[in-house]
Amino acid sequence: MDEKIKRIYVPMTETAFYILLSLKTPRYGYLIMQHIEELTNGRIKMGAGTLYGGLSKMQKDGLIEIVKVENKRKIYQITALGNHLLNIEKERIKELYKNAEGIEN
Image (cartoon, rainbow, N blue to C red; front, side, top):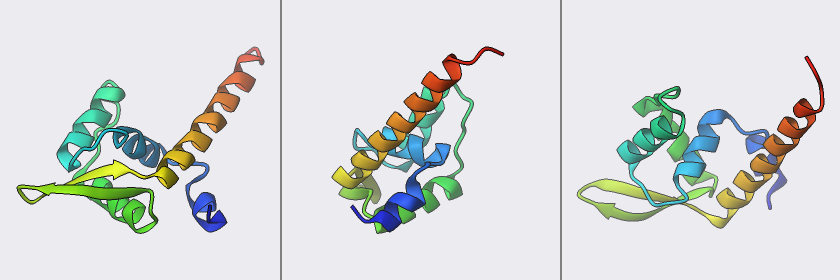
C-alpha cells in the first residue's frame, strides 16, 4: 500500500468513513447521502458538494471505482484498497473505544 495514501486517510474523517462504509454496496450519489443519513439517525446530512468532492478524491486515490453508469448516474463501489483502509480505521476506532472504556470519568 502507498504510505502517502495511508497518511492521507488514517485517521479518517467521519465523512470519508461513512462514504466508504456506504460503498460496501454499490450506490450512486443520492443513495449514498440517504444511507449515511440513515446510518447516523439523521445526525449527518451530507451536502452534494461534500459528497461529490469526496467521491472524486477517493476515486482519484483508488479507494472507490465506478462500476456502472445508469441513466447518467455513476454507481460507485469500494475497492480492495478502500476496504483495507476502512478496516484499519475500524480497528483504530475499536482501540479508542476500548481504551476510553477503561477510564472512569
